[in-house]
Image (cartoon, rainbow over all chains, first blue to last red; front, side, top):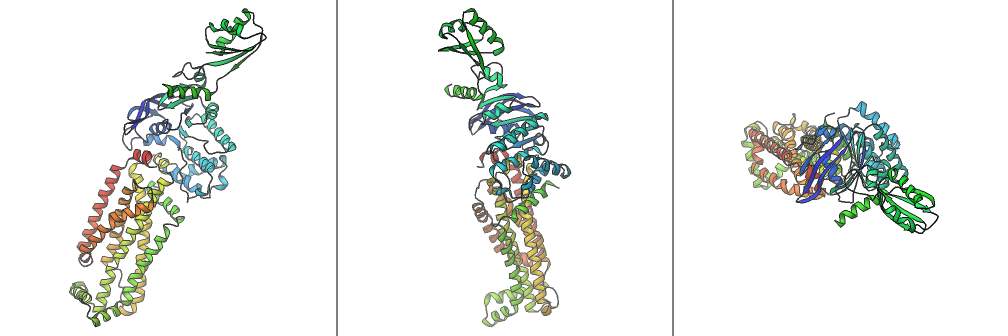
Length: 317
Length: 269
């Protein structure tokens, strides 16, 4: 589990991350979204105990963040990290690089070597294990770095841009690996700009821009309800009628749970808070009002739209 | 495997592929082998020529050597040869000074350039383990090169002079302590200074130059002042070793105390 409470970090008087509080329960995957410089990497570093918070605290994999240079060794041993840039010794082979880092984590060779083989095969790098990392493509280095984040069997995994620089096939393999990690019960925090990836993988989404603008499940964020912050504008229902939509717009506007109604020709675009609660009432009201309903099509708001509303709203504020 | 030796093993693997560093491991040790061999072989002729010319520096040196009790029972040529060979450990001291500043600069700045520091710092190793690992990784190959050069030089000198003197000229106790104790301690000092300076550098060559500026003048000055005493008074040599040990311990302690993971992660670009 990851639990942050009021995490704040300032660098030379400039606040990088402010009052960050959130929980990621065991076995859940949280995607942390935000523009460049939003504080995602600083957040991960604080949660790993690599840099200390100015104020606030956190509990990660059962360990409370400690102060001092050697206070968080047990926490780091329980976590895996995929750094923003892969970072390997270019003149050393992939196998020797991974062995070095695995041994730094204190994993015994008889456990480490089979695990490395398993992950290298899974990442389709087994045949290149004796090659120098300096000769690897960016995607290959990224896959190698993902292996480094996993080979010590961490309970909590931090992945900073896991599919950055990967071709679509390799990105798919990484996403499948991440899902299998989640299925194994690991708690995962992914920093990403890839909204599609977040939408596919995440149980929880946080939108960060120095402070947490929104945090909750995807549904909560889309609906703009529950969770933290009011991210989305709700969900959209498109209703196609036989006659002119404008004649029936006013009848829906006053309905509880309806946020906005926009008529256009024979189509009504209705923003609602909750499909299940509002759509049946909405159809009933239209029928009462004499409308001939041809089609009702619920449309979930995209994460991209939610994200942009959130970030632009913050810019405005 | 101990964390400390992990760094060393990785460094050795890295070194094999670093064509910018490994020539240093050949050139300086070869010079350190050649110099005593030249002294040993050419000393009789050099003395004869110097005496014939009445070279005042040589005559002063001869008087000093003759006045040294431990050389009293040797012929003038043998005493002078032994004394000059003893002095030749000075070049063996330069080997760790020159190589370790380069290897340490590549070792530490290389971590920056290859972005390997964050993954290392994310592992459960302590600051002390990390710094000691880096110290050993930079120092051990250098000391190994120094010792191999010293051993090769001594074997060659003895092989070439045995027929003339009938006993080995090297090693003597000064040479042994200089090579086995003082050279690694000097190398450690240079590595520790380099590690300190590396925190602010991004170019290995610039760090090597800054380290050279920070250490070599000091060593040369001390060598000029105390060099003669170090090759004549054995306690002075032991004292120099003890002093270097204390300096190294203070530098290492200072490095551990001032090591800031945060600074490295947030300011090293």
